[in-house]
Image (cartoon, rainbow, N blue to C red; front, side, top):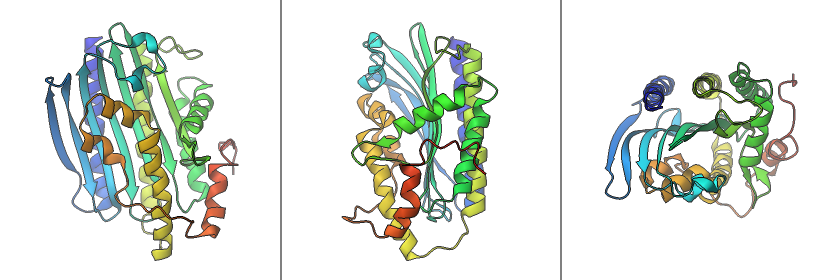
Length: 309
């Protein structure tokens, strides 16, 4: 297993560099600032990572691609809520987390993470990707879900529908009664015991690579297609209003954020996923744009996007 963990680490580091280079090329500006860090274990958490951030870019207002490889003596509550039998175990966790907040409201925010946990003789993979539009275009939603389905297709016929449903369930703001975005795929606890897939360690690792690759291809295509579309102050104000929902989810519900904070991780790296600017308005600044977006966050959540034209 140690050899496998190191293989995962090499892939994640290479993917971080590849994604930063590709998004930086689209942005055409300064590129990502790489901030390496190391923990010595004195606080109970040891490890290292690189937080790469692009702020105030031409296309990306804030983009973060964070790699981490950490070890601790006790799994935090956010990691054991679904598996209480693992409480108190030492662990090692590796992952890459990505959030892209574009400047143009015509371009959706995107999120992706892939991660691997080992706790003694127990291991599992997790991750996924999802999309949060502001000025929604149905063609984008269809293309996004087709990319998600293609990521899953080589592994099991039931994988996309199950992980798509999990994504819809997870990225839902309970206090708002609406989804954070238009979904994608999300999965936890993927190992040889997860039925009906029962994938080997190697196949689970290959699925991690497929998720990362399909996310990068899908979001780069979307960025290139939409980042130069016209918009004005009115659309920008609506984007800032909707970004507040993204911030609420990250701070109130997101297990990744909770895991990072509970495990004593670097706060700035954990909260790089927050939008650089957001606005909490008492009322929506545009009910017409609400009427265009909200059906995708409520009534259309269960739609079969693969069958859509």
